[in-house]
Length: 427
Image (cartoon, rainbow, N blue to C red; front, side, top):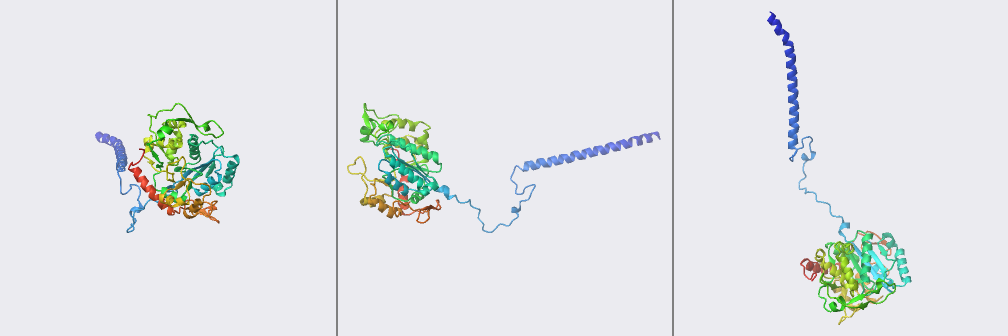
């Protein structure tokens, strides 16, 4: 009887202990299960799953339309396809009217322009040009025409011509990031195509191409230009005088190879940046060398581009100009007249030189090639609006190419193919 009472005494504590153990065991099992499920889900989440574990994608149950094609990416913004040009239009004493006519003939709202009348020009001409630029309503509205008011002294055949070009390049780089090619023109140059033709033709081209006529075959220039040493008084005088020669002469360089060619070019922005920044010092070294070189504009840019492998492969051996030389060649090219019209058009070139002021051939080019109704008007294009035409800016991105685009396209296609194959390139 006592033994039975003892068993009953321990029965209640045993039951309580058993219940606590069962509770703890169950709790441990459930936590482990939850942890295990979380771990398994974490592992499976590393792999792609057709069905998310925590939500349902309604599109998986949506009926697909029969014949529906994958959505194509949106077309590129035309604003980024159309190139921009940065122009230098320069002149000297007596060139005001020619420069103004050329500027309005090559104007387009998408482009950038620097104009310069050198220090030989009388102050009245420079002030008149500044007044015209300021008072032209479209120039004021768009703000893309800049005049170098502090005129540079520029000596024909001297390095001051190169310095003036580099000055304009630096201004254009500072004023705008939105241009692709630099074009230098004189007041004696004139376009043979509209700016819409030019923009349209250059749209598919590689933006790194440089149209620069060049050759390493110096011929008579080795003895007459490369070896003599000359001084350009324009570097240190405020009055214009011709270059003069000093002794002794110098040997041809061995640190780099000389090239020569046309002083008129269409240069890529990347190459212009290299000329100004000169991160490997070649442009500055050659600039100092060409300081004493006769007609340095016909050698400096060409020697820089062909001695830098990165840019040599971008050189296209043409200046996109039509220039007629007398036979035998003289110091200056033949002045173009109406008799040269057919040859100019057949060349496919974008520009021609050299023209005398108000020669009848300019009126013919205006009417038949550019569509201008007088020399004071702008060359018509898709951007033109208002009455009379081109007195207001409409849609600047609207490009309306004409026959000039076809002529230039034929020329550039042939030239760029030759450059791509490495033919006639920096040789």
